[in-house]
Image (cartoon, rainbow, N blue to C red; front, side, top):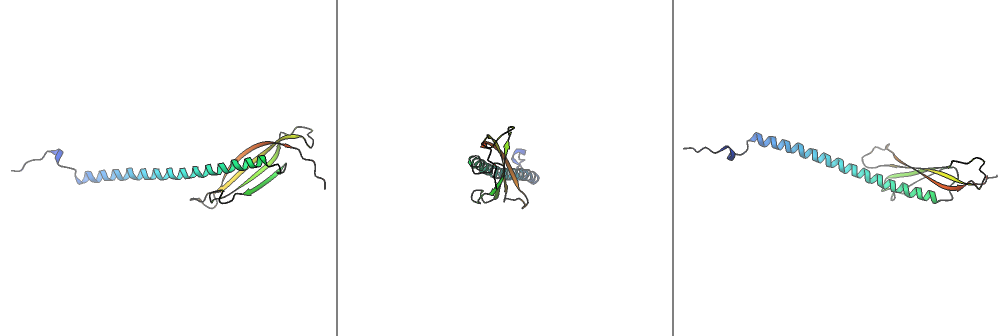
Length: 149
């Protein structure tokens, strides 16, 4: 005589195992895609933080440099070891800010320094992708004497 086994002791059917495996596969794939995006975003933010620190340092250097022109632009590139191997550079535009009327040479005024730092990320970006970061700073400067030839 054959004894009937209760439903709770019979186990899973092949169809139930396949459905559970499919659900787990979809969940794990979604998890891996999410982690990959998180790693990519963290890398991009670390790059941005590094360039931001370079820009702040360059702005501090420019604010302290008394040899800069009163009006005009200066530019340069960062060494590869400073920019974590990426191609990067900067351009600063200097101009008087809020020049008082009838200001004469020697008058101390406020000078504006607009700094633009650019870099080309080398991780997964096309060669034409160039990112920029802009800073503005102000310092006191004396109006220079006119240059006579």
